[in-house]
Length: 181
Image (cartoon, rainbow, N blue to C red):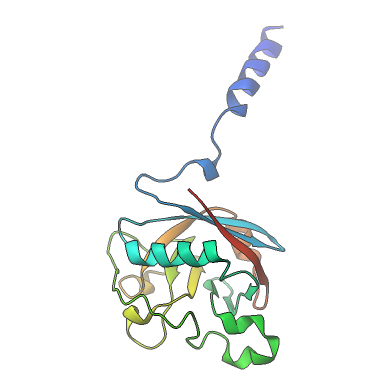
């Protein structure tokens, strides 16, 4: 009887416990939700370290800009990348990831030593050698990649769906990107 009562009490307590997705890191901003055929990925953002980058990604997600994009880059045990509007057109595969975006670069260099390329980190890609040219393409890393630290703006981290990140392949579609506060 005592054991049953204890199990019931534990069940009640745990049912109200926050999930990982409900627990944002201190200072974290809006959560970006990526819906794919393989599942949902959620990442928190860091507006204190990368205010312009976070503002751009949040704005584009709210506008529906990323909806229908394909993950144009998927390198096993390295990263997946999305955000090139040309990726909606399968006939343009050879051009995917070559700098297309909104046409309005962020124009800021928000690289910080505070955020590292750990497994699940989300960072801005950019064409060429100037981080200020970053526009709409971002990537999620599948493993720690310290060789990228100090070169790209880490503006978020996956909090739900890291197993889905591992399953994404080139040409998989990002059905919908949305934001929740």
